[in-house]
Image (cartoon, rainbow, N blue to C red; front, side):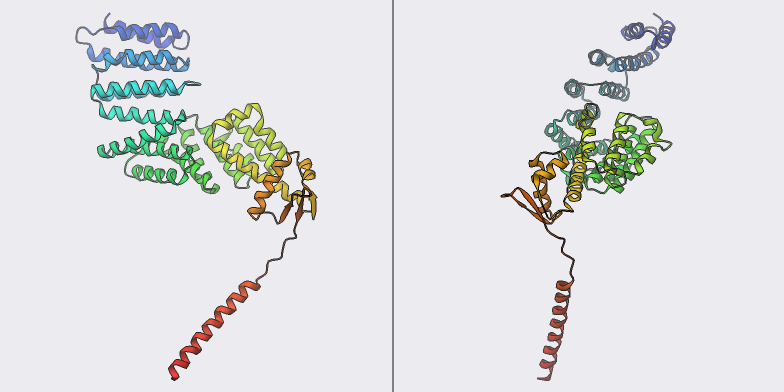
Length: 426
């Protein structure tokens, strides 16, 4: 078949993409099976390259993981006919398409990436191997294989530094920061993010990668309870993702709302949701954050627990590390506020009565009160014998001790001066 006929077939397949994807797939497959003839190698290779991208898009939309995996393996002989740069672009694009499949099995992606790195090793494609290993590291993280991810990440950092590939170094340091964050090692996560930014300052990085860095910086700031700074970072990330029509913009917006709630500004949540940029990202997750803000405003622990335990919200919360940690912190904060409000009018009160008022198990109340007494957030004691709480009156703050110490300090200076004068008279 001549190159003109193949181009006509390709245009026909493009028009059928939305109407009949099965017919499009068969046409693209036929184009990939064609052999060059009559000096049309470059034109045919370009047509095959475009066919690969179109097939990947169709398989990605239909969540056909098996077909994507087969496509990746079947086109390997074609890589010998095109440049290394194009080979790398095709492989990275296919892996990206596979990672975006709904409910993707990361074990399959890990296996595929391992297979691709073995192929790169045999073909001596060093740079491409490291780029795929960077993706593999990310898939280990998403599959929660943290130790495997960290081991590969540390090895990659050493190799990439030797090759001085700044862009890949930025990516791998960002992944390293995410791994340490997932392991709750905030100090190392912050150090990795600092290294990522240092590498990013010396090169140009795209707006998508910059948005990812801002997102991670916001997550670490929220772990350090600096919610004002975290909101700023999440806003930057949200603008970046929104400008590129990336679906992670919704996640960044969710974190912005969480920062407002954690910073004791639940009244601002409604205004943020109603803003020009945010209004198009209305979803069940954003509605959940608005409900949490309302519950926090009313200091209703019961309403708060109903929201986080609801079936439609439980899965989203469990899958999101930042939301999960912060909602637990918010729950503890609400519990403390409710306990202090209920205990305020009493001198002695039964623990069972407080548990009944709050509709919580007595053990949970006892445990929380013990913690609050040790943290000096509540002035009182638990009487285990009678099963009651004895509330002490708040002692007025006195400056007597500070004044006494100040007086002793001044007297000490006076005595020293007198001693020096007596010594000079001798």
